[in-house]
Length: 231
Image: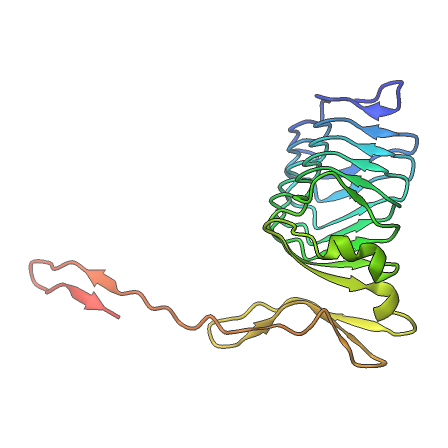
């Protein structure tokens, strides 16, 4: 898969390889080419070094078991649908400044709940980036610089924007993980509480109990016994 230009090639032997469980890109790689690790469905972990500058279209698409992705500060361009179809992806960290983001990068990543921009505001080639996820977006810097983005329509995605410079400061956030409701007990969405000022980020959202849903059991009659419906 490696070539002299410092990239993983399109149609590499890793494409569609279900025996791969982790991807550790070596130092010195500059470009992850189109579909280089497409549909390596059993991958649970991806490590990208700080030499990569470009992740091309569909480069890591459909690696469904990955739960967290950290994109280093060296990356300046992420192509269309590069991380599409990660059903277990919950957290994404984009460390670079003014990273160019293509269309549908996190399309069909329905579990995505946390997106962190560590650098200067990114450049969106399309605002249809996050699919239909319901996520909190954390960023640094003045709100006015991000205001156009915060107010923009991101299609089917529901995004809550939080300025880390305002929220964190000298404070200490303790995260509470998502709690799924049961038939008899309610749950809540993931949130964090500051131990200093007790502020809740992004806010406490209680989820009601599912309740019981009963279905009848049908029994057929026999030669000696009646049939019927049992609840």
